Length: 368
Image (cartoon, rainbow, N blue to C red):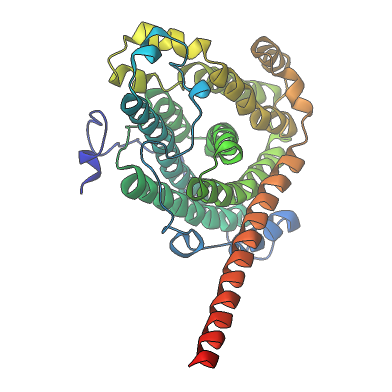
């Protein structure tokens, strides 16, 4: 079935063309690279995996409750609209919300794939080109996985959110080679990691939990790569050049905080846009997500050297300034560890099943 037949609302033109600008850069120095980045490149090669095999696609998913979402976290909970919903309506609402969330993940991963490929093309250093090539493959795998989950397990997709598309477009149109790093690795990936982590840590459904844990394991490397490359580059920039990038970060943070709310779902249920926005603003779940969103972005922005007065004031106004002191390395290490623990539990369970099968076969043989 065509993806366009599964969209919950008209997705418009099936293709989106973003005019490319900036130079493609080649390097003829093949024996010079940063040890940390080359080590990350080696790790990127070692950690490649097959989404068809590592994930247990045989696990069943209820499309009307794909994430085990509690009533209290639903935007409409406690409103007059909620009281009128039947159990079937609530199941439909859960399906739409999960579809909207994972659709934005899917579109974002395709954007990350294109940005990583742009970095391969435009970054001047060969060690960064090497790593970006592994990230391009990672992002392709993530897009493949999210597309399969939406097609096979939920059966519904949503178009890309207008504001996510705007931020992605701004990132890709900029001719400066560092902007795909800043827009994608820091802002969009930071947003994604916050959303992935919230669902990973709260869902009781094994398939989405597997998908999110394994994707986040990859993303921990991507964030480390962006931090290394941008930290080195931004030490060389003038104050004026740094301020330009800080303005981009401020605008992007406000855009993600204020515009990515899933109101498209409520509008699909016949709720006027103004009311949908009001309900979203009153949602405790959204307030929690907004704080988690900045738990990854703020310390990363500070770490790479974008910490001017105007940016600090913006973060004070958003109520997230103190997150600049968060331990980003610890968060990334935890993301990797959770995926490894999940693998270990799965392999131990599979081994127990194999041992039981062998013991059963031996017992049956002895009885015959």
